[in-house]
Image (tube, rainbow, N blue to C red):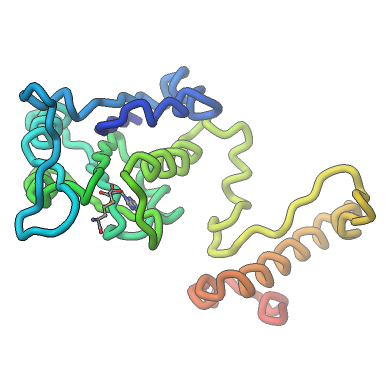
Length: 242
Ligand code: SAM
């Protein structure tokens, strides 16, 4: 997968050299480039913002450098990337969207700052590539950089070969509309707290049932909205009892 990120703070992306994302970059699974938006400015101050039309506090990112950046990274003659613009006014980022993005050959991220990017940049881009404004959640960050780090981490771990054990993907929270059951490791008793007996029983059927029950109970307590969204066909009699 190819990924381009445009930001006025390219240094924010230093962590993308670490851990499994760093390895995915090193082995070519992820071809990632970070670009400084100010490289597409032409004045001595390398200006990227200006006051908002209509008045109000804060500054808005000017369209010209963004227009040039998108022209350079998504030239009209090539297959367009999918443009992702982090925004608290975007559609919520979910595991389902992470799967959708992991299937794309080329993602282009535009990191807003200040009060965001002049809307015409997105409207113009939408005439030649798919554009998605995406929100991390119902709160406001300083800029889109942290959102891109989160989205890229969620997407990269879904790329084939990135996780040592791809089986983890099938079992974890949000894979089947539930939160994952609690996990334990050695020692069997720690500070007087034992690991649930069933997990040490070696009885795989009982263990699977226990994990399913715990997942249902945990999801019901913490995220009742997820339980109501479950497909009734995916439930068995024991699920309903739990
Ligand atoms: N004026 C904008 C609004 O009220 O919708 C908020 C701008 S915010 C201060 C600056 C930038 O941070 C945004 O352009 C976006 O890139 C990023 N950002 C802030 N909150 C975000 C969120 N919840 N999800 C994704 N990106 C966010």
